[in-house]
Length: 162
Image (cartoon, rainbow, N blue to C red; front, side, top):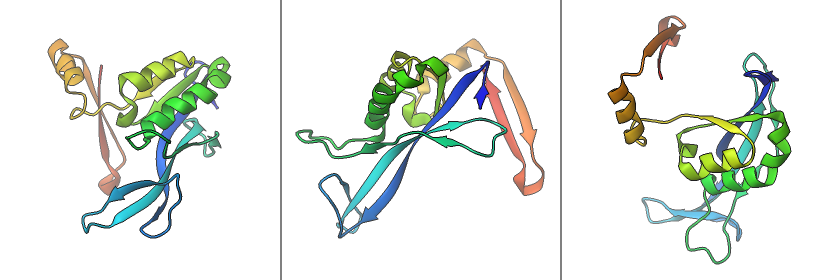
């Protein structure tokens, strides 16, 4: 399952696995809904070894998003990612991991945690949340490439720049 010159690809993503307005535990997060009710929920960060061309994946230990004693703010997926990298990253370092993630992880603290744990990263960066990056790319006139795939309603056009 190694790719990119023998490296291990580890996808990080959060998922909500429980939600209720009536049932909850001390570790549940909470949010107010538009009707005024409180909804309790549980989330976790899932780490998974992936590889293009493989139909199977290899799940790694999860990190749960949970209420922490003494903290005013609720725990979040980013904090869970930093904990996961601190706990499991050093064990993966010898496999030269490349961490994959969405726009949520494209911030300095998470990127620093990925590098500090012995890995590298490929992350999505959306224009709305990374305006300075996109202004820079526009300013330097980075070359672009357009690739289409599929046909009919499954046709997709991918734009690459950089």
